[in-house]
Length: 312
Figure 1 (tube, one colour):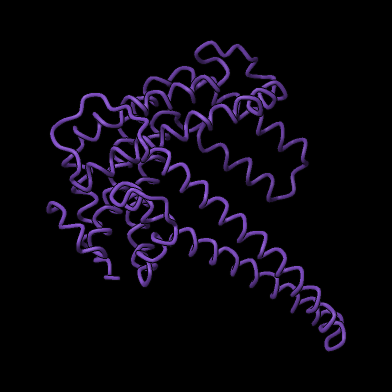
Figure 2: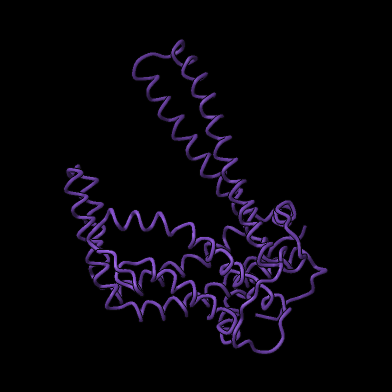
């Protein structure tokens, strides 16, 4: 497979997201509005949700009941957006789109692919846990005969840290290799094939990783900046709670601080939700264009037969 050109992929992704924003908004706004409405319905005080915002147990019970239903609705919506934006990025859509809502085969291919990724990550976690149990069991016996006292404890701690780091590195590696090319494989090749996505990313892990950093870091910074502007200083009070927990505050004290902060955020959210919903619409449209634009351009880099995208 060919190699991804990192700089050009990043430039194309941003160019596509900015240049095609009106068309992307036409694709994204209707399904994303449904997703935003569902999110508001799950929040006490919004859209007919009459649960007492101060009743943490009632909120937890409601969230547990509504979560499966919300996932059944949100997964097709996310897949719908992914399909439309990827088609636009691959040049498969012509003209402007004012309202986009689809339940075609690509949506179900996306859902199946995402579920397969989840299964793969669960298998990885289980296999790692089994391997850890075996290695630490055998290692503990060996260390018990070779080292004693503090030396054995130090080696054990270092081994545990190394294993945890290895697990997270493996999880990131597998997730990046499996997910980056799912969208073009589903849309352009019309199939559910994680092996194909894995094949396309061969030899490109670090290139994809750098592209992802170049896309996600500005997006995260934008979210923090806008959230700070909307919610004000109360947003950062969560760091006071973390500081208290780290410095040994009593669990009851930390729980009280969390409840007070959550209540303040909910009250503030009731006042600013129209601004936050508007931000979600604009930010979501740009983010989808950025991420799927990068994936589409990279796909054409490693799959020359797919043709060349428009210049960034």
